[in-house]
Image 1 (cartoon, helix red, strand yellow):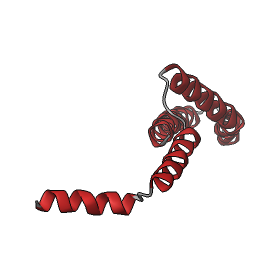
Image 2 (cartoon, rainbow, N blue to C red):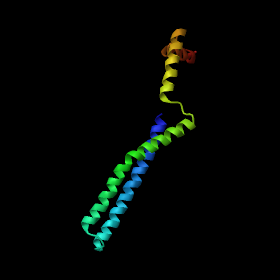
Image 3 (cartoon, rainbow, N blue to C red):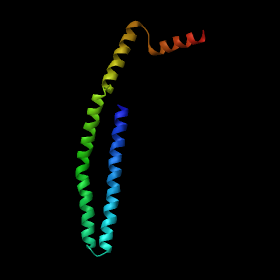
Image 4 (cartoon, rainbow, N blue to C red):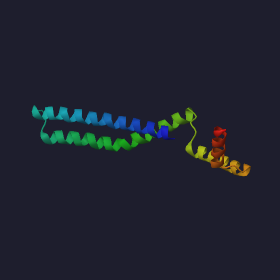
Length: 116
């Protein structure tokens, strides 16, 4: 699960980084247009604001799409879900209890064997 979250974060931050880079390029180009009197400062400001607003509107959808993609990929690769692994651990604890051995007892026994 942690690998999936890590992959998701990397992909998300890569997307954000690309967007920031694109925003900087848009701002640079808009500033050039303003400097060359091709557009007014107000028009330039509006172009940049519209770009940012558009990104903010699409950010949630991008995040949702990426999460769906990662979940489908994880299912295809047959990763074990954390909740399933937790169930296995619980079941193993029950079995160990029924056998009369706890994890700490097993570790202690293993340590004694190593000393022999």
